[in-house]
Amino acid sequence: MDVGAYLSRIGYQGPTEPTLEMLRGLHRCHLFSVPFESLSVHCGEPITLALPLLYDKIVRRRRGGFCYENNGLFQWLLRALGFCVVGLAGRVRNRFTGRLGPPCDHLVLLARLGDQRFLCDVGFGDGFLEPLWLEPGLEQPQEGGTFRLGLAGGVWALERLRAPGEEGQMLYTFTLEERELGDFATMCCYHQQAPSSIFACKSFCSLPQPGGGRLTYMGWRLIATRGGERTETPLQPHEIPALLQHAFGAQLSGTLVPKDQEIQPPPRRGGDGASSPPLNEGAPRNEVEGPRNTPGCPAQSCREGEL
Figure 1 (tube, rainbow, N blue to C red):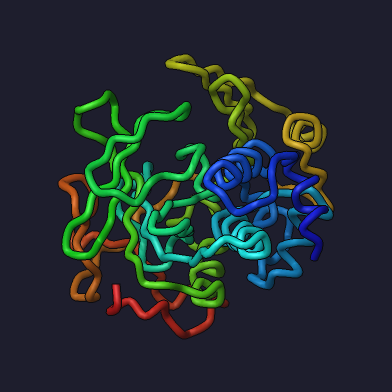
Figure 2: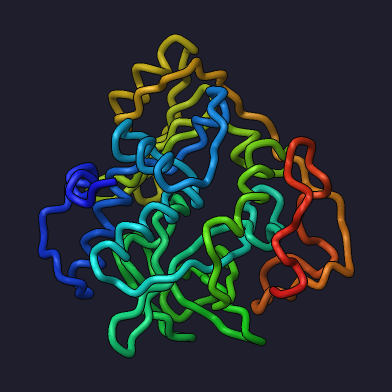
């Protein structure tokens, strides 16, 4: 695995000292170059959380991935460049079901520069474009919107604000317990199979666009958003592979089976030891999404009681 090839892949040409300027530049370059996508799930390509495999897919084959892949490899890059960075486990608020995901549902990164800490996330899709200061209550405006972190009972929550000073929409929660990439193996399997996961239910590929907006392929549609405007273009199956290569730089090695299936809300369950979300918006304790003996997944869980 070569740092120079990785930097070339994401188009980064800035300084190479571990500074906040470099961290911001790497974060933006990665987001604008490496798609957030579920294509492997729908091309018959099993996803395994091994760094050499992630490097081959993202750097050599110029593909993207979901959070475990993008953030997992980005963590390796940051460490190779001299940053102090650890992985954290998050729980995403599903915009289709309105519920929080299970523990280890999302991998997010925490970088330290001196006595300052920054939240990094290049594997969420439509999120923040530059690292966020880990400071509760601080409104942080940037190109992708205004974001705020909340903290209650040891659980952090990321919000996107509709307007400065107003109530926000919760995106996900996380704790500061350090995690290794292997801790996410069970949930990586879950997201490739579960009918409650967007990755299993929808074939998609998405990138932010220079100057604002986002371009997303999903199922049999191409969706473009900019400001408050949204346009959808229907696609024929034979058009999709060429579109993916032209618009997202994604050349498929397998045959894509397009999918845009409705996400099934998981059964309600209680008493799993999961923490309640720290903000008013989110899932009650008895409405937590989680894998329950998903066929083909390892039996071990992600230590649910610790979060």
